[in-house]
Amino acid sequence: MASEALEETSEELLLDLSKTIFNAFTKASGSEAHFDDAFKNMFDRYTLSFIGGAVGGGIAGWQPSFRSARADKSMTHESAMREVVDFVQQGKEKELINSVLKSTWGNKYLDDQGNPTSDYTKS
Image (cartoon, rainbow, N blue to C red; front, side, top):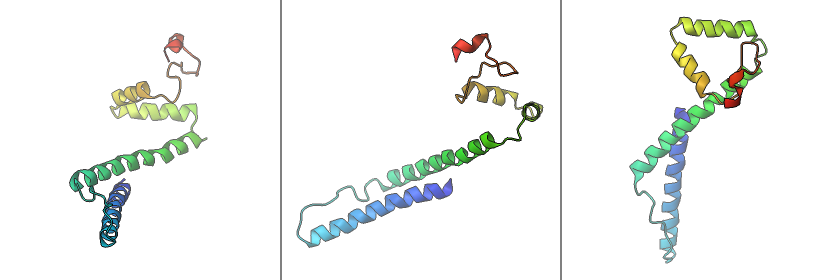
């Protein structure tokens, strides 16, 4: 996450540096072409690049977790139920329910055997 944030910020810095070098060469050659926005609003642009990189890096970091969870063939119905029970015993049942209701990875209107319930038409 932090590495992605620094990478995005360094890209912004390199862009500004490139514009400055271009401006120096065009001015030396007598051309009027130049970039006016090099180093303007530096704090805003670098801060947004840092935040955007951090958020993007965080989101990209989740992807391997979802892939490995999906590929985990050792997860049986019983072990999944144990995970849910452990989660509830830790007092995180509201978090669990909210996660299920917000998920869009599949039909959330299934009974404990995986069959559609009467609320199936809502999904």
